[in-house]
Length: 428
Image (tube, rainbow, N blue to C red; front, side):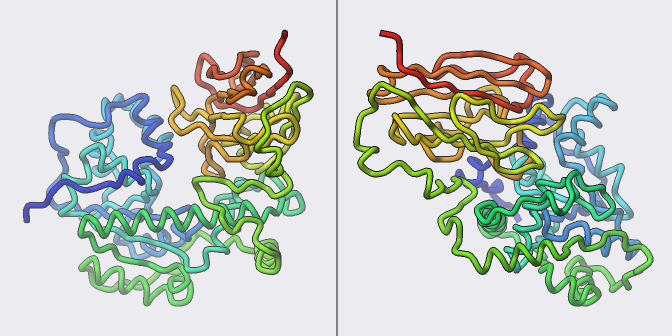
């Protein structure tokens, strides 16, 4: 069958793609020659969102003896490290390399997040191998449980049961808003997977986490059948991963369901404005007037979560690895919401729209660092006030103060870990 090229919607292309951004900064994503793979090898992509049970499913597949353990070989850090060590010149050649290296018999299984599927399409790889490709699409019915798990692991960095937690259970910070945001993110990613499969005439092997846990052998039998393989018994002695849910997960779930949602409108594209931060309607209609400016600044810090401060103070931490993923600025005194704009920078230049007061710029819980920021005043406020800001980065550098509208970045494009914004009346 002759098929058209695989389609990716514009909305999917506008979603955060940290792996493609990082890989594309060092390697060509395409090449003119076709992908060269043994004709007998079939590719299986285990499509997942974090905390959906993909490690457990990988364990079950591996226990049959048919497959090698599915790992995240398409993560940017894994790709770039292997290409540097082996001097692999392009991403397609890296893909050929890992398939040959990790295939077992006639199958190669690899975990793939949404942005990695998009990367494979844009690199021209998936189009070339689609006739020998299967997709396992793993999802959870209980999105609240998955969102809570994502919130916890964002703070303690304990992605597997055997990994030491960075913080204790008592130090975990509950946030109904963060749970709602994470739930919206998972729902959005799953809908994009569905969209990709539907528009390209692909029929994934849908695996439901709850069914998998309830009767793993039955679910595995169906996977093997769909792959055209004979049934295999699960070897329980080879199962390594364990469930991490405990009383904290249950407590947070009960609390989330008993409270009014902190943000019914929460979505992965825009964090909600907290009610107490919203400037009254009358204030929004007024032009800014000279005097003290006070604005709340909220940042989302990797493995810690949301932290809040005000203009004039530093916010963030220079502890190793604790970069800022996103932030919002909400005026309380002196400015209206639409008097200020700002942007979190994830690459060489602003790649997302400038946000107005109260809206969130960047990402949350995705471990995507901001590499800088920009802030500027609008309307009459631009002539009445001056805005300056400084930033600290994980390479130890400090940049600024810079004036409103300028990009504040480290020369080496190191992750942003702290910043300070000051807004004062302009000099006469």
